[in-house]
Image 1 (spheres, rainbow, N blue to C red):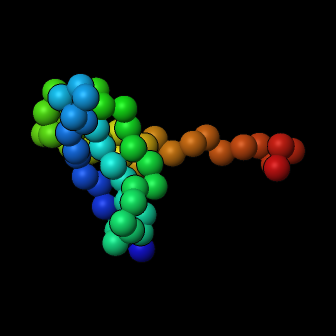
Image 2: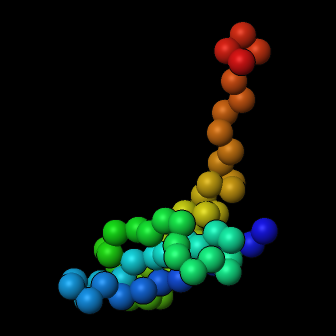
Length: 67
């Protein structure tokens, strides 16, 4: 399944937030960020950076006695 990431402007603050839709064709977002970005481009760039950091830094492997 694919997901869809879209920036949107918050009418109250004039700032942008990100909506993450899963599955991609969902009408309503699964989660949204706070409207903290000054532009849609800034929101998109930050989301790419967040996803890249998470993909490049997997969680540590737990020792066998903690499973």
